[in-house]
Length: 269
Ligand SMILES: [Zn+2]
Image (cartoon, rainbow, N blue to C red):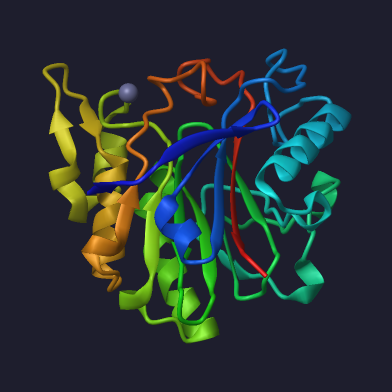
């Protein structure tokens, strides 16, 4: 897999982005946790309203992030992620859903797609896999949240299909990227998880204690290829969150008490 991920900062707000997407007219940003306001992990840039943090501080963190990456915070469009595989088309009326309050977020959804410009899709992660998709031809974008359950439910593949159905995007034209998330180096799972992914046994490495190391990056990449995405157009950050807890939020490393990294994808106007 081709690595494509650069860390940068703007006014002391750090984030990583994919150069391949930027060059094609799409903003990408995976927030680092440095230099924010947060009660849940003091001083970090938690961007999620659903994790029991102080909402005013979260909104200030979002504003800081939005200003750093050049999007409008009031247009952030979010969803209540439930480890499912529902994909929602973001039309005009959904722009800004959940930007200011969790009550107004798009319910029970794990992927958002749109072909509108200046709509910063924003999903939240702490070890789960961000899958980003963009079509330079039609301008369509898609952002998915793929933990093991979403991956088992083929969310990456469903997001590609939804982009084809809604916007006529051809899979072979898509750019795809896999953001910072837990790597095979750290992601220990048991038979329950393995049995849910019978078609991806090659992505599990057996340990001597009966458990496995699971490579979720590889499973998602395989699903993208199965969906028709051109392998040379799939990029990967190659950054393990559990290995870099000072930089990114990691649910496993912090035993569940953590904020969330925001991953933003936006078609530039
Ligand atoms: Zn690791």
